[in-house]
Length: 358
Ligand code: GLN
Figure 1 (spheres, rainbow, N blue to C red):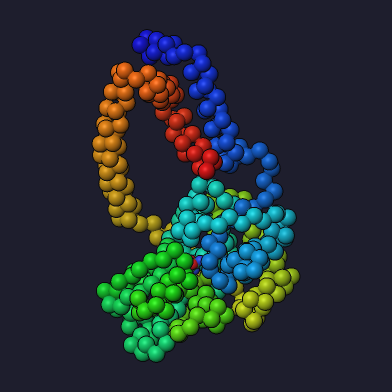
Figure 2 (figure 1 turned 45 degrees about the vertical axis):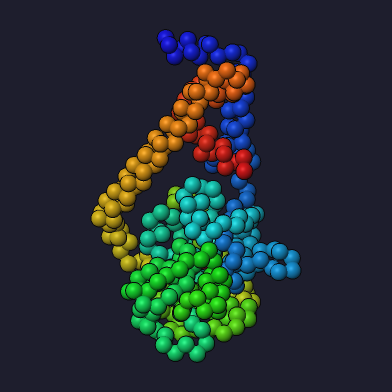
């Protein structure tokens, strides 16, 4: 067969080299695939976006991660007999990391919402919060959510605050990677308001000494934070048991009092956002819309790869007949490398292997 003959034409050293390269990538890559990890999983890898004081932040002096969520998670680890290792991620990267099982759980002041609960699981609620509006001191034209119409609003990307701001008619919404950046934009006068979680904004104004900002329209929503966990993970049960335990034995109340100088409220077992008929929230229209959108992206990527592939392929083809021997050899290796390994293996290696290399 033509294919076999082509393979047999590869020099032996080239074949051995190919095997060695793939083996190295495979070894590195597989250590990231759940179930292939070499050591037993005694550690919980916990994702967090570390610029959300007082829940998670870096201690200025020591550079260590501190905050209510951090202490709570360490206490949960102790109760569950797990070591905790925090992994810093952007807020809008936490759910994808959970979906790909890169982390065991995420604690990041994340609100339990029905929409998020379609792709990830949540522990029982561990904090009662809600959104609030912050404006520059003395700006008396904004007193409630309705007054935000047509205004410039800053929010943190991927948050419930961003979702709420996007629903305001005629408002221009600018998104930032974290809440302090959004608040800074307000101080600088480039936006009229920030929609953000009340406890975080309160902390910024009272403790972090953010000057010239005041809070209006307190608690425009009722939200509960939950620990986010991949679907079908045994971590969910362990986390809920540990949470129940530290609420029961007073550890939770101690941590709460330390950070919020008041007694914790009684928390519900299930967040109201989830108790109201979650199953009926499956939306066929939305599903269809997503599929059409996905098809559009696929077509665009195909067009791009066709265009660049044509250019790249022609360059390689010309190099293969060039009089310059090292260039010919290099392109021969490139072609044999990609032709000599199955496409699925290549995809697998690129998906799991490359992230492990960086
Ligand atoms: N509670 C908000 C949310 O879940 C914001 C959380 C955060 O910024 N860390 O969207």
